[in-house]
Length: 328
Image (cartoon, rainbow, N blue to C red; front, side, top):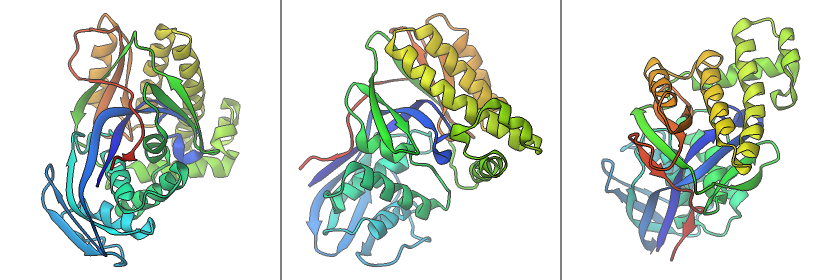
């Protein structure tokens, strides 16, 4: 038995998913795999890339203190996915952990397919979002799991996070998507939960941010909350415009939208870092780079660039791949 789930890079649309907004990630050619044998009622997995081996019985409650810590994701998945059987095997990954490329969601989906491959992609994504929240205590959105569960080779996934609808947008072959790993980060213990709460405060004042306009922001009394709302409102618009520009081959406009997105994430949403800001500035000043931005939840992680093929910058050249799957 072998399962595989890709990571993802978010091209544009960060901190919009948990307010039911728009995002545009793409599954990438780096994977987490689970390979082993069917077991009756236990899960035993050894990681070749992280520390340790985990073992527990199916039906056991989620263990928030499981060590090694990556086992918490496996335990959480088993607690929600209604396993058809157990598994004994190995976990391998080519995804850097803590880089903001959805290594946790890839692990969740690879494990889920090993335990129960009968669920629809959307149902599975929702369960894996629940597992992520159980494992981390962080109120994350649906973007990562839904992208990885529904991806198609050669395309990005334009997701409406309220309707849970996915539109597959071809990624042109005459551009390169380059990802640079800047610094390790984790959403646990970060200000991610604060941002979710601030967006909820904004919605208490003006209603759903996905349908709000910039003129509504004047009704928000708290200046910080107003800044958070301005990012989400403008970011949703940028996602729509980016998808159109990319489809039209207007890479200069698409790149400018990425630059604007980063500025908004840094200034209005305060999830970038001085180091990431400096990397984005340097990239955007490099000939051949249409645009660059931080990607993912922030507070570290990666920067993604849209480039002319062959542009001499460091980083991983990412290709759009298909969804998580059980291979045999």
